[in-house]
Length: 118
Image 1 (cartoon, rainbow, N blue to C red):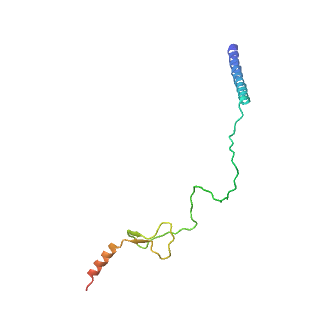
Image 2: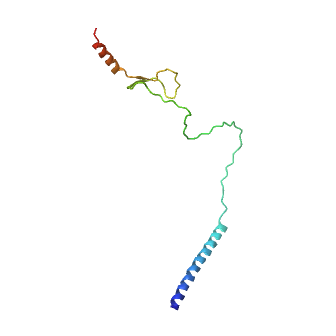
């Protein structure tokens, strides 16, 4: 039993000593590397100073959302025949924005007129 205890104690001391020795060795190597490390060089660019007009503009990528908006809806459904405005332009109140295809309605009108007694 004494041999086994002595053997375990010896292994514990060796393990503990190895950990401490490794940490001391590591610290020594780090200090050695830092002492022999060359000074870092910082690239420097030189230019002449010129007077220029400064325009306060920032170019950025982003998203713009308006404070107010308009929902445009039509009174009747149908197939769009013509768009009467360009995207992004201002329009006047009452100006038609789109024209709907009225061929079906015209045919229904003629059919109803034909059914009327003369």
